[in-house]
Length: 179
Image (tube, rainbow, N blue to C red):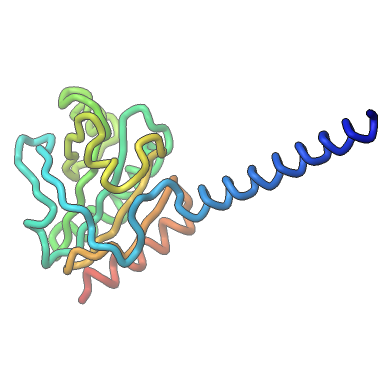
């Protein structure tokens, strides 16, 4: 009986470790994205926090950065000043579009969030998270950045705020805007 119990316990531990490792690898590989580099960016429409309408496909011919965000996201609040100063202020008058997509918050909250973080780039409303769910799994976290080339192809994806990854994204972005 002890031998059987020991075998069952060892099997259980082994399967738990294997399943956990596979799950971690899947999460690490996908980072919660439903899209990949090389995919056509899913089209969407939104209303910006200034009242203007925005449709992604209307901006073909420009390099686009989508930043998925929300006021309750501490990592977003940390990253947004860097996006403002190092990307938006540098590229806003070039062949470039930057839209923050605020996940499932009302206009008043979005405008308050923009003011609190001192950003001047536009934020798009994403009621119910429908835009987010075109790009990432429903329960996947934010902050995320999606860089889209002039033809509408995704060329870079980030998840969370990592300075090395952010700098690599900037390099790809600035090179794309140059061309």
